[in-house]
Length: 122
Image 1 (cartoon, rainbow, N blue to C red):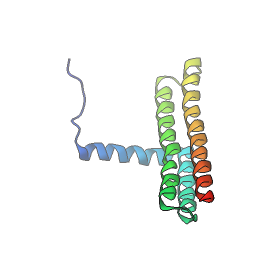
Image 2: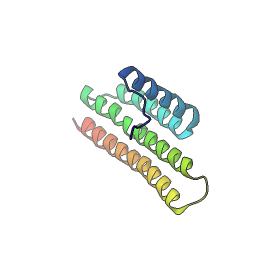
Image 3: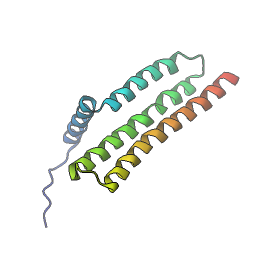
Image 4: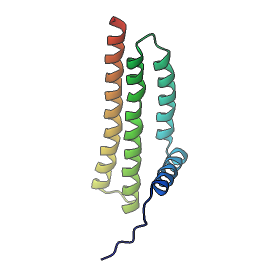
């Protein structure tokens, strides 16, 4: 059985990824908020009076909620593709995606708290 799949190349994969990024930026307000938090957090991190490696950790940790938000958006879109009607499993899938974003924010906050504590006691 032949699958109807296009041939993938590095160029095509990159264009698909960029198209997905553009689509999420256009249609997902939560993703836009994550980008704003990333930019503001990065500016803050790089202006703190702490060691370079701690600034890098803070800045890189800001990608965690962005990745979670992309995953959550993918889950929501697949669920909406399957059904727009209320279904308990659809709700649970969407809730699980929202939980992922929530936990990513908690993790990022914990990373920031730990790094700032370490950076300020040195």
